[in-house]
Image (cartoon, rainbow, N blue to C red; front, side, top):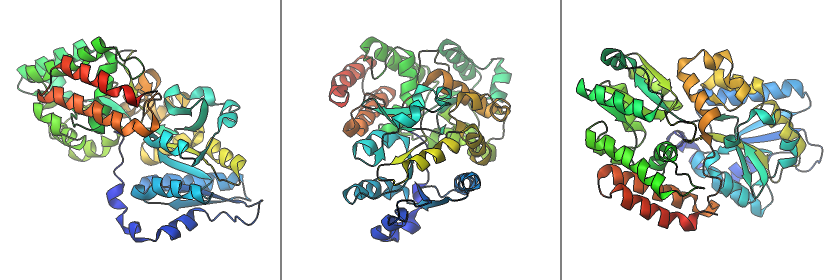
Length: 414
């Protein structure tokens, strides 16, 4: 799943009364219709992320001197419940910054206002790939100003030793892992956990074989499972990965001795502080048909904002603008969602970001799947993770796992 490491650092605010947080989030001078206070809810506590929010506040206030942007922190583990609780009293923030994976849940709960008219008239809308624009029943409710996603991390020292180039196809990847194994190295690390993190990491390989959530191709799904099973059988991938979350496999990669890791852009800090070898990142070698979930935060307009036009101006001039996405890139190393910003030297000149940016444009897919029933997203993710894990651990054959997933997922899709 997308990287959300913030919860453990937010416990100190969990002691605040719910009413205090709710009132803080709604301090928009409700008594006056011409209020110039714009409230922006977020759950960021890391210095770099908070710094970007402050930069956006200053950026918008500089161009709108009569507006006071109020950034309101709400703990991640309370965020969704507080937004939904506000529906009953018709209160909430002007701008909502939230986990993109909860887009459908929040929209259907009535916490977000449709922004289709704003989006349709947005001159830069064409710079955003479909995978970062979330529509519910034909209405645009939110878009992502940046993304988190998976790429192929590689140990350049090992590749140099075995005389292998960075793979661009699954066949090349398999051949490279065989060469690494022959030289005494492990081929790849990834998460096979039997929950959402496993499903997140499984989807690129399954979709590369022809399966997607809107094309339940059992033969393609079986082929995807057979691929990862072949890696385990050949000794390229440890069967223990069936119990690993996304942290453990990257720690193994960063420790050395592993040629490749399927993992995310959020691991840059761990790589820089731990790896004692030359490393790089490439787009996952899944062809044009493979899909990589685009995680990260999404942004929308609160359903009870008294200033929706101003809220849209804020979004279009910060999260959705080229200037804003460059500020986020420079401030916290996020992957821009805009296609034009992905071509900026700050991305193309950074070898760790270029591979991720390539995937956004070529393979980016909505997260969660657009055709998943909002109330069943977690069920779909759990089932997908369970089947992926069962194949890696050897509990189910690829064919049996594919049949069970196809049958079991039907009630979770539109």
